[in-house]
Image (cartoon, rainbow, N blue to C red; front, side, top):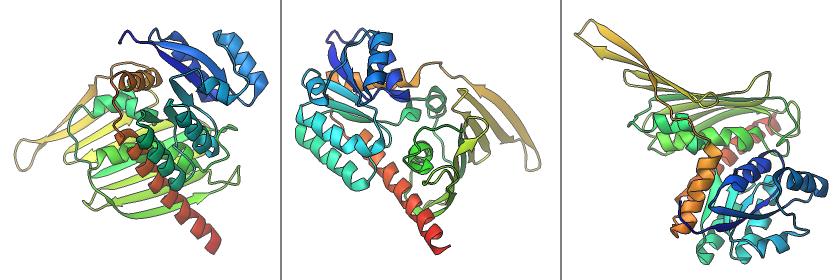
Length: 316
């Protein structure tokens, strides 16, 4: 890493925010200036655990830092991001970028106007299993994804499509080089007022299909993607960082030989990699907006899926 230290702050120290604090506190290229959370008792607790200062107001923290991680409920992202940009901060926003495409676009517009680095925390892009898979060129015909989490109280304020499925939407868009022709979606509310279980079929113009399931009503955690190509099938276990490839080779017209191999996955912490990448972009003044544009594209599709599900519910 470069010699220059970046003054960093974290806004929101709930479940995921604590992971940001843990990594940033360890980095020798970051000066973790402080944290802010509306929940004062939680903020004090995290401050003691990681020996990091607290700030009484968001403005006070933003006045002291070069960059900030925004790890708050989705509906607050727009307000905090715009305030951080007012204070000339680079911003890292946990996914989804915002709760509407319009507010996400306004964040992007302000980022461009202020010429700041802005990244959205689509952490699975940095998952070592996905990185190992994408080292080769792939031409998927069919993708199947399952993302399940054990029952918990987190992220009930948004649809499971925005909370969980958006990860796989983002990865599918990176794997399939084509635009979406049709979306077929179904979902139900079980625990919350939002969609808790959803199944979606994305049909692409090049003929590829992605079938995605996301649920926060499960007895176990699962994050698996299966990719089917011509004479090849790959299983990507994003949770256990494991990639298995099965392929078939023709010997003659009648006979196929089948090969199976475990793809080498370099063990690394995806969030640490992601925050390090964000730091590198700041140091190198890399204000490329591709990261944030990809996040907005994924959000647009997630919103369309939500709209389709809600329309079906209304008809019932």
